[in-house]
Image (tube, rainbow, N blue to C red; front, side):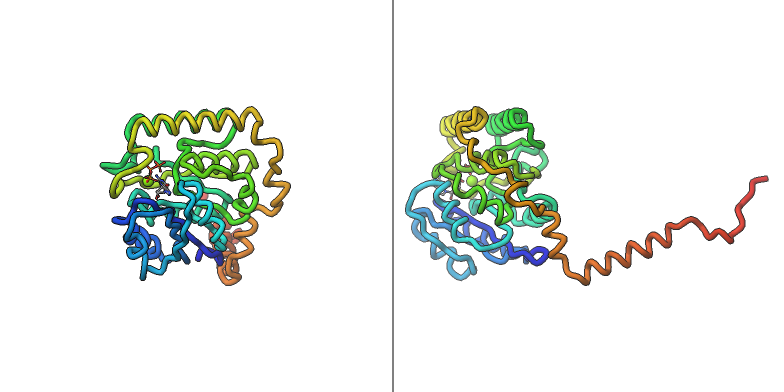
Length: 290
Ligand SMILES: Nc1nc2c(ncn2[C@@H]2O[C@H](COP(=O)(O)OP(=O)(O)OP(=O)(O)O)[C@@H](O)[C@H]2O)c(=O)[nH]1
Ligand SMILES: [Mg+2]
């Protein structure tokens, strides 16, 4: 729970039998996550047994692919704040609070895996992946005049529920470049967002996407094609801008949900501070220099 809003984490799973239990518990242990939704995408045998008893809810999605799995999770999720992640050990539960902190100001918080200080030893973020992701993100930033973007495909992201409701009809990609499509739909709807560095650790087990350089290169090409298609207007024609559809800003909604007690305490604190910082009493004699 965060400022009266429920928080859910969605994990798509395919080949994470060895890490999914620890990942689920790591997120629940933060005390901020109300529920973990696991979408079993024809996952390795034994995955369900690993999830059992953790408190996570498991759904089964038979349509194969990263996008199909995440979409199923989104459709099943009723939380106010929805965090996407992966249960392969790469993302950290400690970053939940960072995503949530920015959710008070903006309806979308994207993670980036390309900040050097956050890339752990052994993480699959070599030069090619890091600069490739950065280059396509910068291209997007320039073509659409967005705020800073340095990663197109980081799964670790937070959305206010209204955002996903707005863009859900336009999410059509079932495969690996669903991540970039999600980002492009946020951009196309002109939904305010911020990108923050998140920890990126070594994966437990084999990566089936970006571990293979050729697959990663093809994914990069698909990302570039997708961005250009959006820029050329193939997908953008019928997008209603966020400000027109959801006129109440995320900031106002979070402020509304702050407990009255906290608001009163803050008011008292600011009053006492303004008293303390007020110029010294006028009755006090001025110090005159000789
Ligand atoms: N490869 C693959 N992953 C799937 C599928 N369905 C769900 N996923 C999930 O998608 C996530 C990404 O797959 P990974 O094998 O970790 O690929 P990756 O190298 O992390 O890819 P990036 O996150 O794009 O860097 C994992 O959480 C998988 O469980 C599927 O059909 N194929
Ligand atoms: Mg992964």
